[in-house]
Length: 75
Image (cartoon, rainbow, N blue to C red; front, side, top):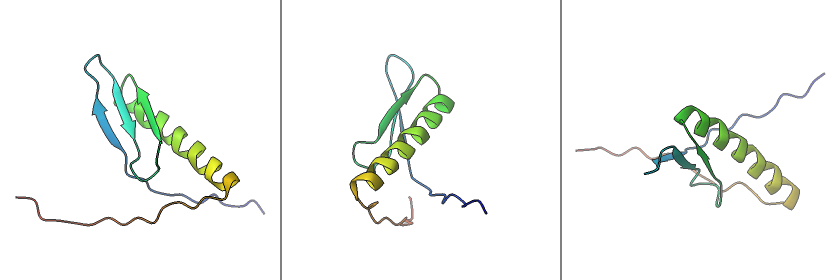
């Protein structure tokens, strides 16, 4: 029987670049950054970067930092 892959949800931040495109990073995973000419490309690239980060962390015996989502009222 094939093993099912775990699926994780990670917050990412998109920052438009002055010269065009998007810098995107995952604040939970230190050093996990990427770029894309479009938001769609940036989203795919950061997903790939997150997968690589997780693979490297597993090889090095590092744990994924604990995280939670906190809701706050916005005025």
